Amino acid sequence: MADDDSRKVVQLPESWRLLLQRGVRCLRDGDFARALEAFEQAHREAPDEPQVLLALGREQLRQGRHDAAERMLRRARELQPGSAATAAALARCLGLHQGKATEAFAVLREAQAACSEPAALHVVRGELLLESGAFLEARAAFGQAMDDPISAESAQLGLARTYNSEGIALSDRGEDEPAIFALKRAADLDPTWAGPHVNLGVVFGRMGKLGKALEAYQAALEREPASPVALFNLGTAQHELGQRKDAVHTFEELLLVAPDYPHARSALANVLGELRDFDRTIALLLEELDADGECVSCWSSLGLAYICAGNPARGEQCLLRALELDDGYFNAIHNLANLYVAQKRLDAAEELLLRAAHVDPQRTAELLATDGRFSHLRDREALRGLQPPANGQ
Image 1 (tube, one colour):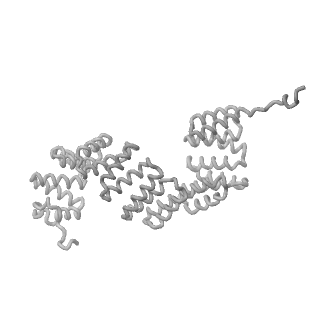
Image 2 (tube, helix red, strand yellow; image 1 turned 90 degrees about the horizontal axis):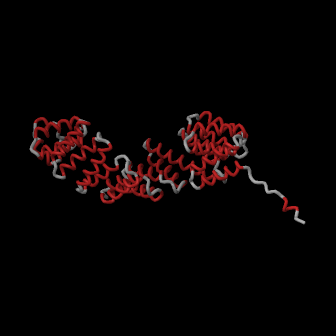
Image 3 (cartoon, helix red, strand yellow; image 1 turned 30 degrees about the horizontal axis):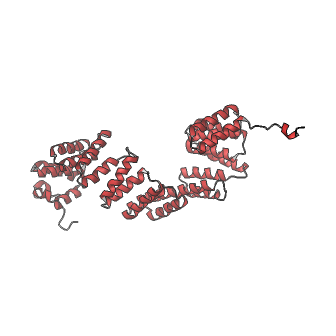
């Protein structure tokens, strides 16, 4: 006789649960398209199941489908009003993606009154406060979630972003030392994040501490080796420190990871020009001008590169083009005046220097006083008044 247990039927999970589990696995694997597909299929089979609505709403929100996400999350909250996770997701959708901060805070207050475990709500409240620039309040909100094992990591990352944003704001106000403290705190809270180190580099650069700026950018690249902004800033710092070959290497790496990064080609071209590699300088600037034919600085740099490469006629054309686009662009005026002096076209050079004096009289006077190439022009009556006093004041 068969054992009674052999006749028992194993109850299989409902199909929507299997689809929900499949979607979660796809999310873990980074397959977001298949995750969304699984959640949508689960929703077709269980349109009023709160777990499905929450999962689908979150994924729609992650993929930028904000209106669809709001509908799903509102319905999930109607069906399960005591769910902190649902209230948090809805508030995030409303406040961070749809510009409805007042309603988002109202959702959080209502949910917190009914929820025994509000840590997730504190995290979202911190995010909303951070978005509005209320750094102290945001810091307090994230701090309230730090003791919760589920929300602690999100709260710590939120604190890191709060200190980072606060550091940027302090630096913009010229409060560099407090800014450095805040940015270092952000870096400590999220050791894998490159952002605070990039911002530290910017602050140190503004303070004239280029060595420390360089170290900060290198620290950022240890955390995010392909960070375009860190690479650009590092190359710029290396250039300013006279480390031209290192700057070339850094800018070349930047162009590999972000070929269209703004000003990357012109920055590399300027360094190569100083290294007298004029062929590559010209090629890079021409490539940059293909993308932006009205880049005044590129036309000016290209003109100088052609002159240095032994093609003054083409160099003059490029400098004149720069001045067509901006008749007060000082570098183009200066370089063209140099060319005219070298060609003994002193009247044309004088006219340019008078234009330069209108743009920047002090800088023009210093050029006349210190640049030997203008020695033939210093005694011209029209330019005498531009010479700085003998005591340099």
